[in-house]
Amino acid sequence: MGSEHQQWLEAMEEKSRRRQEKFMDDIAAKLQRPRLRHAPTHVFRGAPDFWHELEWDEEQRIQAFTDNFVSVGAHIVRVQDLGEAAQFITNKAHELSAKYLIRQNEQVLNDLGLEEQLPDVQISVWNSAPEVDWKARAAEADIGIVMADYATAYTGSVTVLSSPEKGRSVSLLPTVLVLIIPVQRLYTRLGETLHRFDEAGREQLPAGIHFISGPSRSSDIENDLTIGVHGPGVVYGVIVG
View (cartoon, one colour):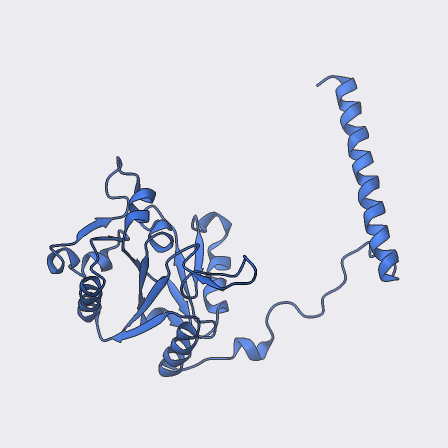
């Protein structure tokens, strides 16, 4: 880099800094308070102790999650085992006259045996063939089936992680989403999920961490609530166990 070019960059940076300072000074003046040049000291950091101590038993977690999930337009089904979960999906596919279903590439979902139970429905397994455009295939699906990695009762949300076997498109693009939620993955507080990512460290984070709290909802246009604009319009949570 030539010296003239370097001098020009330094001059532009100095000009930008002066503009930033003036901008912040103007804000401080309008607020009638002095500029803060250093970050204030935080006496408290993180959640208070009483929040860390909040813990519900299994039935309380299930009830709270159900209430919160249903309140935003989703549906909850409770089954005893994966066999009943498979039967629910089979019945729902027939009820909706589904022609095409896509699911994550996980052993638990393999064990559902949907291919045998739904011989008249085309079923694809995410990323099982390298030549396929899997995003396009997910967009064509009537139903997407996803395993929950975690779920939070207090917020009524399901956490789904991305990986080569667990494409986010399976939960984002089909018309209907079915979330399989093992009861042992249902926790009271969101922090019980988030701290796992802190412990794993930055290098171990998945490609995506998605929080699903019911069907897609948008009020961007004239504050008119619309369902299913940015994702599935119908969501079923199947609590197993």
